[in-house]
Image 1 (tube, rainbow, N blue to C red):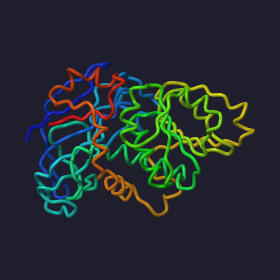
Image 2 (image 1 turned 180 degrees about the vertical axis):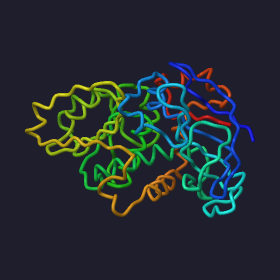
Image 3 (image 1 turned 90 degrees about the horizontal axis):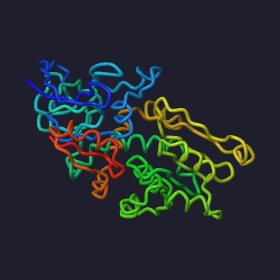
Image 4 (image 1 turned 135 degrees about the vertical axis):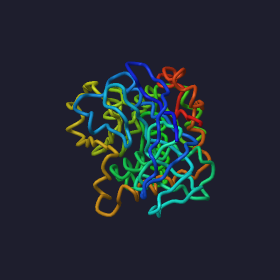
Length: 329
């Protein structure tokens, strides 16, 4: 069976190339892709050749073809339909809809260990491409222990930032504030039911500081703002990944006197607070269940046919208006 995949071939270049699929073995499934989501932050680093040598192994995604920097396939947000199953597969059957951490490809064969069945009552399947982002947001809330916070802010109104706020609200019962430098992010943020502030507005609200600040903007300025907005013994959860870019922040001033805590949150490991009782598979199951809300479809933009991705990839990865670009097959 033939398929087609998206490959980053060289600096700022991507193409579609044919691939011959292997036969399905006893513990494997063949998936026909319906949708995939582009991870703008990570895939932009790859497209721009900015993955540090030190991270070449840790950055590998499941079923990646090639090595960093180029040529390489990348992606981890595929939603598809099972079209063939091996004789020993028990997790899914032909016709099931599934989420798989797999690069952008029209059809693919994977071990059942990587398949996550989407419940029948899930609703619009498009939302399921957000599963990896939701998993990241869920893990960050566990790292932050957000259910114990008295006030919460999220810096960065991208997909991960909004999903982090979505979970924080359900965990804590609080109304998180989302902060960004782009006024165009106000409409989607407020439509999702969150209060929106521009960064300069938040900085001048001297009466408002936060017990818990999530930073998702991948900018030095955003992290500095987070340190300024944290209240006494506040916790700043750093969710950004900077690639090769060095970041300079001041750890003088209020950092010590306010006893602030700067915590790295990364999805490769289950948060320490849950690691003894929650597996990676458990966490993904929870993330998919959290995506049932129809309002989350507003985070999918723009919508691009798979065949048009190479022609539009530069705009997709660099546009400030993009949330989670949705690829249709």
